[in-house]
Image (cartoon, rainbow over all chains, first blue to last red; front, side):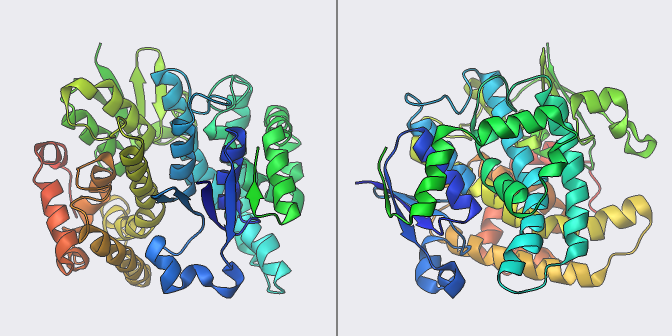
Length: 221
Length: 216
């Protein structure tokens, strides 16, 4: 039975999960949850996901939520195929987890605030909060300075191989760069810029973008 | 050589790492970082933690930051000498640990840390007064999260399953402070949450690490 991913394909967190599955060559069915109609806050959905968020996955009988827990699960389950996403030694694993936490705690909260105010609200015809967006941009810029330092020492965040630590950044960064006009934040950070160009050109990520654009329900490697 | 933790007793993130070291009976050295002199932003410390935060962790040539990543490393390194708090022998159990660690970091932490900043950090370190509106809003948010925990803990003994894990312990640092104040009622009024907390607070590692940390 194929993995089922529940969510909205344009949303950042489900895209993280899809990217991991594609990197590992795992087929899946994408089941639409109608966020705009607040389906994710209805009791039937919240039976599965007590916080009423997306994504939610079912791998046979095993069900999970929280996209970073989900990608860790698939990266471990399919450790023997595709790229090594978790590091090869205890020390490398610790570095992967360190940068996963940085993404979750320092990077994404700023990035989400920007995307929410400069993209998500405007496309719904609602005013975004420019002050909040600007404050978040300044914070993100400082975070990216730390990334620039790290990426001048290693090709990817946790070392010289692409791992989950890089993967979890990609969906929200694409929104920042392509939909919020903030590509310039990388212009004075040559290593971070090169890292972004590299990870966003990964074949697996391009397949995720094609899948989302196609509106298909089933992905097969 | 003992591992080193660079941190501060009032730093909930530092306490998270210390709890794990104590649970595993590990030898460690706590190197205090003095926030009052700006030591956390000094070049030597920024070399350890590029965000100028605590904790940082040193094991020989390995330098790490982010308390949950450090904690996971510690729990693996000393696996033979303490409880199995990551359950990495089982794909599904370890995934459940990861789920509730994410919930702790994303949902629980956001609500409870605001209460901690207003009711502990502001008065103790800045001689300030809590913003009661922020406290009330955060308490309401925390209450909603704890409703989910109450439902979860009525079905399983601990968060990730019927086994204690790092997902439970990761809640200790902030909760320790909050249950000493008026928001304790949020925990007292939810019987499964209350029992869960009392179980965590009875652990020797908890008592060892939290003795001497001011709660108000």
